[in-house]
Amino acid sequence: MFTRITIDPAQMGGVPCIRGLRIPVASVVDMVASGMSTGDILADFPDLEREDIAEALRYASAALRERQLPQVANL
Image 1: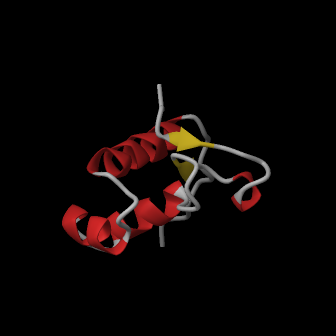
Image 2: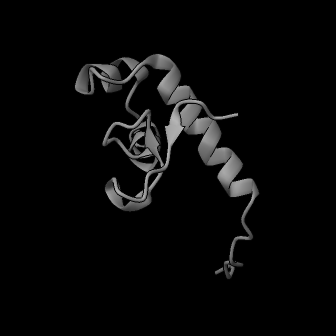
Image 3: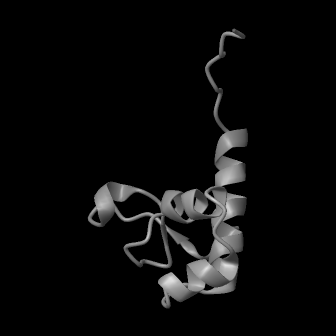
């Protein structure tokens, strides 16, 4: 299902990364969340491809659906 996401216990502490690169999925998601455009991300990380970014977002979405999130108090 996620062909561009790799998890290797010997690399980056086993966190999900993009295609065996030392670029964690969380870092890519953080860049998108901070407002970086796909073009900006690709310019800063030339080893990444457009589909890597899309798959990182799909992976993060799937990971959130699989976990129970703690309730947050409404203040």
